[in-house]
Image 1 (cartoon, one colour):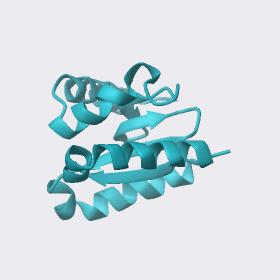
Image 2 (tube, helix red, strand yellow):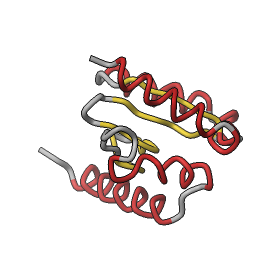
Image 3 (cartoon, helix red, strand yellow):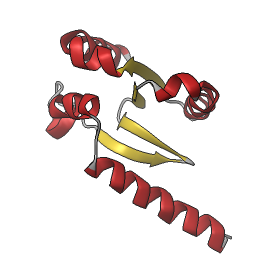
Length: 122
């Protein structure tokens, strides 16, 4: 049985994800430009997607791959990030993390690394 509090929490998470999609960081925009519309070798991605009590930056369901783009705030929130990664891995997802600077300054490298990872997942 789902409680009202749980239902509100899910609704709040979906609302928050929607808001994050409306105001992406520059690094998220840069990566999404290629990932959207199956732009990376036909792999389909969703962005700012609710998974449990977390919102992930990008997810490819077919390959069970989550991509996280980290800015400076993630240095201070490493325990939260570790808990999220543990949660996702426990559900069979692989998690790739990239710093904002890498996405912005080494975009080709990041895309090649993502594609290599996707192609290596059976």
